[in-house]
Structures are given as C-alpha cells and as structure tokens.
Length: 84
Image 1 (cartoon, rainbow, N blue to C red):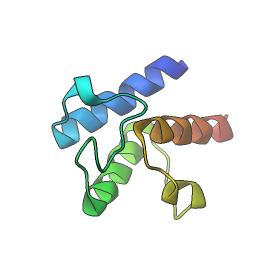
Image 2: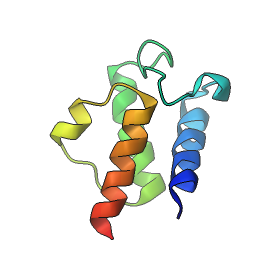
Image 3: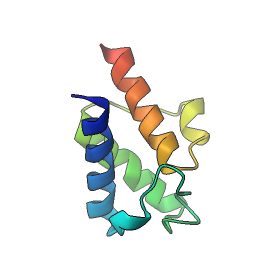
Image 4: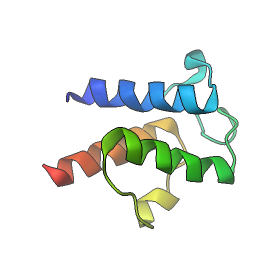
C-alpha cells in the first residue's frame, strides 16, 4: 500500500465513522477544534484505525501527542513501517 493509499484509507474511514466533511480534512486540521471530535471520539478513532489497518494501538506516547489529521497520518505510516 502506498503512502497516498494509506492516507486515503485513514481519511475515508474517519469521514465515514464520524460523518466528517472531506473538504475540511486537511493535514493541518485539528481533530478537536476543526473536525469537532472529542475525547470519547478518539477512543472510537483508535478502534476504526485498528480495524482498517489490522494492528493494535496501545497506550503509546505518540498517541497522546496526536492533535492534527497529519499527526494521525504520520502515526499510522510509522506503525506500518515498524511492521514491515
């Protein structure tokens, strides 16, 4: 899967789960302020990402630092790279 395909899968999965407007889903979009997610949504987001990419996301320091959609992209891409 290419980097762009990974990003597209992340964006489409999150857009579907949270009924997000794809127009607002830029790498700079803050997941709380711009996309309107809350702390409970982040739990669901983890479940969505685990299902889409078939890996577990544990309590990792990197997860706590996620603030933007671009942060999510980088996190998932790094997890995929670790599995390779």
